[in-house]
Length: 408
Image (cartoon, rainbow, N blue to C red; front, side):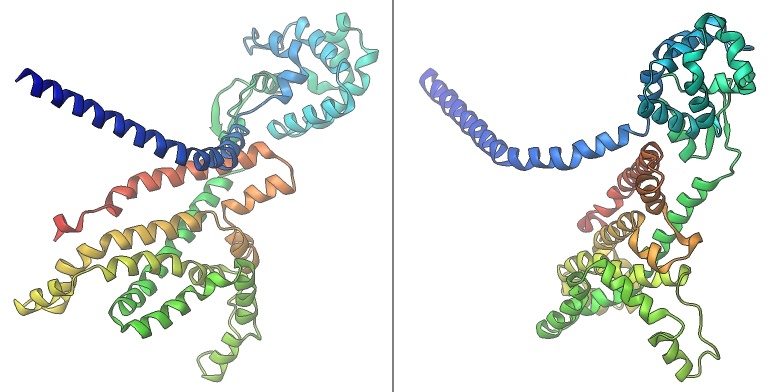
């Protein structure tokens, strides 16, 4: 008995060693791909997201002032040490550092760029001991509590300013958060982005479900031909496809000429540089992303289930609702989720075929990155959009993984 037990333990240990060796080999095979993804995908994304709270310009340029203002209770003006520290800090700045500081503070309060650069130009002539009287004499804004409150708000290495601004919120001189004076600009942009994405997803569902059903039910040769037509948009770039829709939808384009020829309209319809053009072009681009996953699911649905339900007297609508739909629902949810999430980040199509009121969040991320060079704001908008995408995915991943066997 003891010998057989020892043999059993020996075999069990050998199996465990073999399993660990296989796991180690699998991990070593996956390690290069995981490292590549981490280096070229995760690290840049995390670094970009950190820009939304990074505030290195202010504490690096004004180290003495930041420490002094940390003890200020925000009542009245700060003490003389804050004025002296500001003069000493500005004296130590070169032209590039002063410009970076002025640009960063101007994001928080309009007019601080001019004030900082003006004070920097005169800082060498101001004695630190007399800064309390010299700075207001140089510019009366230094007697404004809100100016010092802004410096106090932005004196930390991390700031919520950009994230708050992306939600149309701001902090006053006392540090309280309240709605921005500019109105709900970015909240409207986010709502527009989700609205356009939801509409495009709905159009893809309405057009894609019959197409996927036809592909699944058609003979192999016909299905292959139609599938090639579905995949045809993938063979050209998004820019080319979008430009083609600009040509087709313009006032003298093929679509308007066809509608005029059929007598459906009396004058060319405005189909471009508005929401209609955005819907048409984005639906054309995104339709294959919905059809392909749904087609793969529909092909696996046993036809015997449908015939059995029909033989028991169920009408076609009931067969579809009770038998067919539960089995294809994972494909519908997966395709819709893929279309919706991909549409959230669209930039080229709305920029080319949409109007000023049709631009999505990605347009403003590109604007702040390339034109105004406000990386903090671009990172804040991108981070909020990424958080929304992750939340939507988590919320819809459950329904998308419904087990058809338990649903039927």
